[in-house]
Length: 188
Ligand SMILES: CC(C)(COP(=O)(O)OP(=O)(O)OC[C@H]1O[C@@H](n2cnc3c(N)ncnc32)[C@H](O)[C@@H]1OP(=O)(O)O)[C@@H](O)C(=O)NCCC(=O)NCCS
Image (cartoon, rainbow, N blue to C red; front, side, top):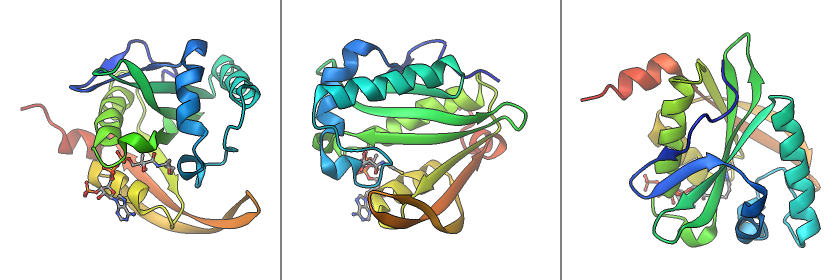
């Protein structure tokens, strides 16, 4: 099972590629918005120090093959408009978890679905992943709806799974299997 993106992924409007340090100023526009980070286990970035310490952690996790952090680039503007990642890799079980965040300026335009479709094709294909999980806060209907449209199954509610940002949070567990993805996305 691979844990890196061997090549940039192209969709009609987007490029999904591995993060670089130079992406941090544009990613700052995404993660400094409290509406974007509301349900993410990260602080809202208030300064470049927050961005650089996050990037250090990304590099450490990449070095341990524990996470594959990508950015989403809008081809029209050539700007980074979001982030998507695979993490919590389990090589024996061929499993990973999916995370994503999009700049609020681009919500509602189907961008994240377009990016994640490309990532899932690659993950279930070349990367050799069999199961992808995603956790969603029950108060985040846009994220749940996005996953359902991609074919994820809402498998169960994990009660009081997380404590962060001063809250105890339930989480919906979503899962998608390679067989399901390939059956629903046969070429032609
Ligand atoms: C979740 C997120 C990536 C969705 O991306 P997006 O490209 O804006 O997705 P869309 O706006 O096309 O919405 C996806 C679906 O949710 C629906 N939706 C959006 N907001 C909704 C709301 N408040 N209530 C119910 N449904 C909603 C949309 O109608 C759409 O469904 P449709 O295609 O059937 O019409 C984006 O909102 C985001 O980055 N949020 C902040 C970060 C985050 O929460 N990440 C996920 C952590 S699990």
